[in-house]
Image 1 (cartoon, rainbow, N blue to C red):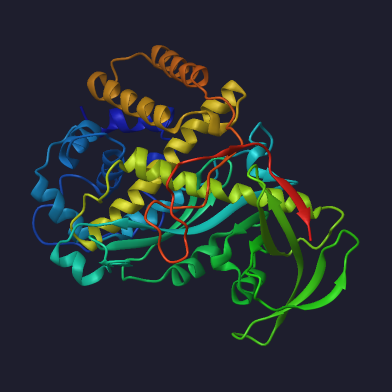
Image 2 (cartoon, one colour; image 1 turned 180 degrees about the vertical axis):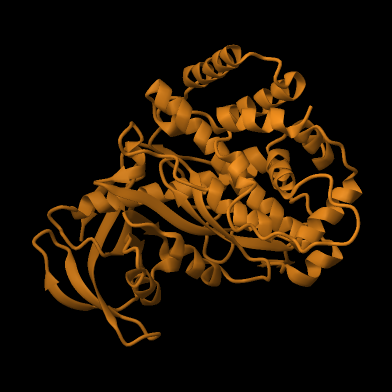
Length: 436
């Protein structure tokens, strides 16, 4: 069976634009080398790694054989990946990483008054203690020395409400989160509303967002110690402030919101935000404070990727180049599963996040196995009926709405000022928001 059979079938059913992702415009082609041309084109190598990280077991050679119908040795694949470098996978990211929500359908959880909700955050991946990794990746310093494994960092721009990654920047040379995030914010589109945590709560990040040509909105939590010049007071209790950055002499006019949140345990948490949504009538302060809680969806998206998709503490790659390829492939696979959940949610008129990530991933795996065995022997009407039944099963297995539950901010092995968790408790109930 050739790749003309299986790959377009999956692309038409679940992996929309997957074939295009493996042949993006402007993909860096490796220079011509003497000798026999490669047996597998670049498209199949990129697609094969994405398909491989979606499998629960097996080797890359076995996944490629299932996807393309051609068998290569592991050593040949390893040499080919080292020769290609990470750039083909980086070039393929924009073809797969795209929004999974639609404001005209029931995906309203990803929007706020016409703004497309996004978030930015960094994460790390553990890699093996091989000599190439030790030379390029760094180990983080822990309480009792350094971590057991080096880590590769990346910064992700994600869509809130669907957990779909929109842009990924991998630190191949131990770049900091700030350096990667400075490139990631350039991927913001007009109409995006960025929610950022306190890492981005500084005047320099505000100025960088303000000068972007796409003019995105933002709501960023800032520390209490930061100073800002008060220009005027709004009738709702918020203030219009002037913020200056040391990096440039320009200033920015923002709206500052100070609030406090009380959860079920009765304790108050004090918050401070900067936003460029200056209209306090159109964008009430308490609505924005409650909206910021959606930023936690990006952390849940990281958990889905690392616990359900990756399902291992370490990346499978042993060199920095192949590790960067694998990270790109993981996020492309997550975007594909997000598209599956979006289709099932649209057909069933349910929330995207009520469609199980793990079950959608299993559905994609099972359909891939079926097509790898049957090829083009299944008539298109029968295949369409199978896909419809899979979507119906995903809709029927949709979970209930998430409980409004909060857990204590403690850890079992405390570091610095974090309290120690001796008994795992939680509270249930809505949070209470007040301005201060």
